Length: 397
Image (cartoon, rainbow, N blue to C red; front, side):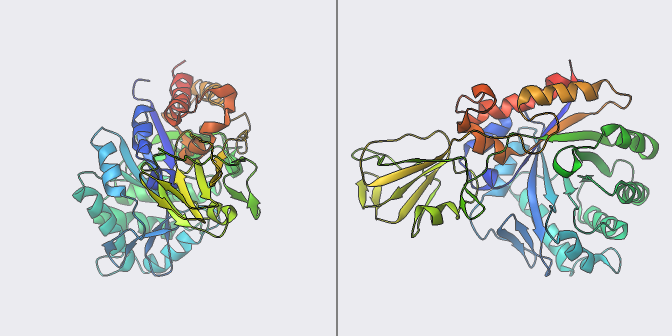
């Protein structure tokens, strides 16, 4: 399977993490990056996770994410780019329905104008978008998804993909209608959720559907990576947060490589501000003066990658390094577990065309945790590549 697809869903860790996020996707060997998740509000404006980025037909990031340039860098290196719309616990497709209920919208419809602006921004940066992924978990309605898909086609999007985990009959009808009205292979891939609420899904059912409707559509099941509690959970620091007292980088400390800094009343408040990609931070209890700047008390300075600590009382440190867990998969979440599961799928009647990993953010958060017997070696690239290799080796064993 020399054309085996290896895809990875990524959110805030790609948008706000260190520039190494681009390198981790590329050096990990992934075929495609799926940016998750685009939300649609009641006005039809687009929000990437919690950051508005396309409003009233204008691409403008409310906080700098540099998505067009970051995506273009990967696109020029033959990494596919997909934007995923929707998620559990949202009203995205319900909101979409209000803009497509009367048919396929055109220019002047805010939903149309915003998705047009999204595509234009990526192309202007030297990239493109290969598909819009439907992660519909809130409003299972065939007409809504078909009209939304046909709107995207009219704008100039190459294809759409599905990310289903339940209501297969509705997905099947949507698949049939979009192929009939949008053309062969317009539904380019089925990203079948085989984790969390979809952990009981077997790719074979979708393989049969694809064979009967459009054999050119790729069947790409996905599994979750090891999961960190994250920085803040249930109104308290997550169980993976480790505190390092009195570790200021006093003297010649260089904080120029920070992701960002901010003022917070406490370290706990700083943890609640996380955007994605932060693996450690300093919280200043006293003012500290470094060659790269003066950082007053109550300043938090955030970094990605492996931590480096000093020994001085001005600041305490916090890192995500507790043991990560298998939360979403039936058969385990380390690379070796995933390889076993993909190997089993490769031998079934309907061969899958690749696999995806959910979620790059989890890989970043678990980099320092020595999860999976230390396979990460404190390197996001190493751990990301291990998950990619699990897909490829499992399907080509």
